[in-house]
Image (cartoon, rainbow over the protein chains, first blue to last red):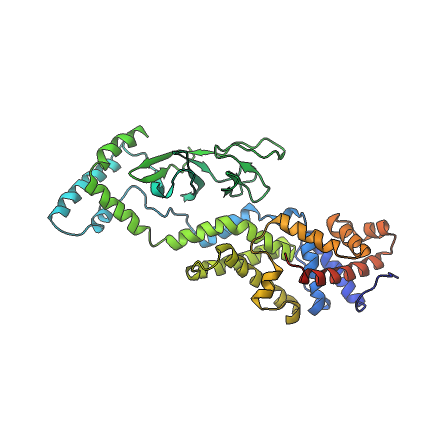
Length: 228
Length: 197
């Protein structure tokens, strides 16, 4: 019936099987792999997969999936630098013997007492970067406890923002060229001060990115990951 | 914060002490370095890797399975990536091979349909992936088809018409639409194999 025939005639089984698979794909379901499409005919199904991905809402991973896969590989997200609250044993282990050592150790111990003492360092400051890693213009991703963030040095001022998009909580990427944080999911963009900048209407105004308290101490940059 | 400053000033003026603590901090940073590298690779690329896989299988369930497999491979072999070439290139090479293996195993595709040689595979998919590139590729493939093939695929996939709606729009029987979409996809697959990303 169709005048534009190329190649061998597909069998009825192949035609029906491919149509069922297309139906599944367009409905967002995983197609079964029918016998009729084994071999060369599967190339058509692969092309159907590409075409049905076109502008599909499923083109971006779900937040649940991204989280679940992350926790499979990184059961607990630990900062790569130890917490400020060093134990006395840790401190001692990092030290080689000698008389001078004892003196410094006592010093260290005294220092620790101060650090850990009541009303001294607020609990929860977590080191995320060395200041040397963050020259002006640099931006660095960090994971501190459960907080995803970016710490940045803008013209000598150091601050940190949440890396979670305020649209649907995808993780933002730093776009050095555009000097903005881009969302891989729906293309939202945020400025270095955390404001939503691209002109797309997401159905509601997107709140600015959460500011994370940051502190620089002795060449190390700390944040307070707790949101309260 | 003010407290931290005050104590900080008092505390960290002792240079011996701070040297010692810094040594401790740097020393213990060594062990989880790989974990940290993986974390950053994962966070930066999971969206695009998933997007690429999704463009190759067209459904969320398989895309999630394969994305998990890919990051498992990355997790196990990140230590062996020695910085030859870009990390993205390496990552997407793993992704391409994983997707090709999936198709080959699941549908018993002949080796000829998807050659294993890396050069050929490289020509088939981008070093990196984004949705714009994918949609442009779809557009180029459709443009290369004869009009009736292009029409049936546009109705079915881009406008998401049912077979019945497509039949009405193209003034064909439903059976003819099914045959036509089969032929159109076969031809598009042929074109797609030859067309670089």
